[in-house]
Image 1 (tube, rainbow, N blue to C red):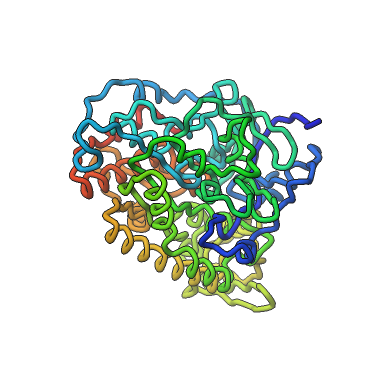
Image 2 (cartoon, helix red, strand yellow):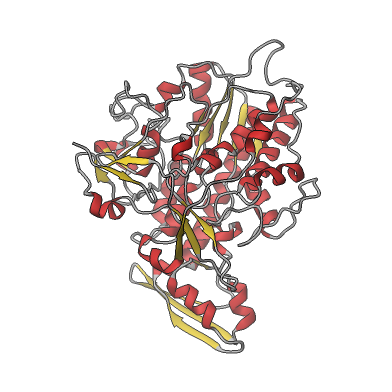
Length: 499
């Protein structure tokens, strides 16, 4: 018998390569992965969090340090006022033929799913960019696998607290959570709303929508599972054997003539937070570069082959340095405050010495937090940090080179295939430096307490999702000669408040 428990948080070790496709040789899939859990295991509820670590923007072992309070919270977001309002049918241009029904699917990772504030929950799902874009397109039957109202807070999530400093601490929302059955994999309560159009899966993405891999369904090779399996399995009906049937097969049972493919950048964040593996090994990124550079286009070919759809939207990735997460504890602040910087780290028996001219990023850990809270103006800063505290210069440079190479591949392929392109690298760079022009009275800002990022510093807030939605609409209008109206960000911000 499976044990029932409430889920205060949910996640798992996630792959460097977040897909199991025929394009990726089976013997390569697990080369640089975080260790997975075999599906035959039966987790003990008493140590469940050690088997499925938290999604929060800090290591699970640092939970007590960063979470100062547990709260009950019910969202007051008035998104129904937006989603239920009638809209004129927009000019769809070349997207679909005159009189043809628009059948759109979205595939991707946490951003597509509406993940934010370190969790997946109903309010976030409802305001994910695919839902907002569908609304502006006049699509009234676009479905996301929402948590029910009685489980509206989903996996649980965090809210930023104001403790009088500029550094992050959080309170944790722990009421109205989704129910979880322990097992292999653990099972969240099933989505029972029928046909799904949004196949966003946090920290795993469209790997689970890939073709069957050695009869593995939504599992990985050797019948192993990750946290993504937990999210993916709740999308499959009880009548489906998730060990044999992929989400792609489920998706292709419905008509599709337009798609959005966000080749999820979740894996970059997962590796950045990873405390057990060297996050950005050169071998790992060489492997990704050689196997994944055209993955959105491979997925586009698969959609076209199975549905005939050839029009859609693809995305580049942002650079890690443009995420609020890596600017909470900034190198520039250390430079401005200290007399000099010497930070020593060791990884794989190699020593790195960082100073003012080095490229490195600091993670939110108790060690890093203590440095910033205690450093006095004009002091010399000389210390040793663990690899858990920092993205060192080698890791940083490998990451930047990989992402830029990947993005160029996406840009080139999008142009060749006449797909709309949303350039997240460019957009996030502008937001990080407060240069983003939203064509609105509402100023869009990054940073810890800006309005673009949610409390995890990684995924967009409700307002950030609307910004992404407008960029999707802009790209579609430009590529397909359509005239889809933009979201009025000022009015929208009043509906979603601080979500």
